[in-house]
Image (cartoon, each protein chain N blue to C red):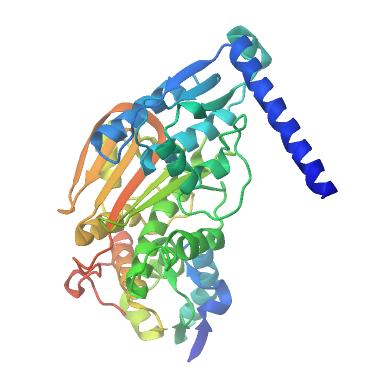
Length: 99
Length: 345
């Protein structure tokens, strides 16, 4: 399983679409190839919805949530970040009519 | 010693020049005297602040003199609006003919400091307003960089590091406000959503490209409440929705914007979004706080029940002001309960 250290990519702030895009660009190819990926958020302390919209929500355009659940693993994501991630995914499922 | 004397002479000379320039400006040029009312963080205060904004925005190419003799209180909402408006005036483009016709030397703002009460001066000093608009000079936005905790101007392009550093280490630093780290992280994340909204839907769509985002925070130690107002001069939420939809009414447009998942996708990147305002509303409900959004001709108020009351504002405003009140005591759990979430991960 490949591990992506999110802090090394974007630093401690996971808040904007631009930083989310950096993570998405790495993820999208790996997800398309069916790889299993761990996103390690150690050191990332601040979260906002634009980041997760851009980094994770967009993946649901081409993938079912069940597939993402099999392929992605989130580590060291605090409660604020995890709640936000789940809200963003719920919103993205509705947006792409996959609910 | 010698350098000290030179410095004092320089200072004296500078203040003398400023003094005579101000006398000259106020005596030979036309100017518009604006009497600043008391602006509290309540309905009447917000109404008063937008009435004031309306006077300036309908004719911004002018020389304004701000008279504070009637202003006994200037809360975060009033401070941020006055700061933003001064920048708005300074960023007006005009042609010489307009200036000649109005018989003014240039557009700008001057504050009559001697009309301020000592308490107001102390307030505006402590919240760093005077770091930007020095009260003993002809006013122009300055470039001071030290010690922000109240009023702050943010650049037109989002600097994430500067913003989060300000929120974490200055405005909500542990010496000012002691919070559990998880609670602090949630409060900061919530506040960031306000800024993301201002940058995502406001600044990138504004007419005056040099204008940024303006904020003013206050902490009420007695009530243990945080107040924050964030202002931008973008197209406005209601007008932006109307531009990208068939909705022809600002109140209806605002209702649409507040529905979770609704977004105009104004920056051309098509993706699911539209959570920011809903997240703010959820937070205010759990925290038993308050959220006010004033944009274009609409005002929206969300209280602890979590539902928005949306109505026409008495005065239209070309931009958006979001004000939030956050309870910092332990009265409520601010975390989203599991039953409300799909636990995908």
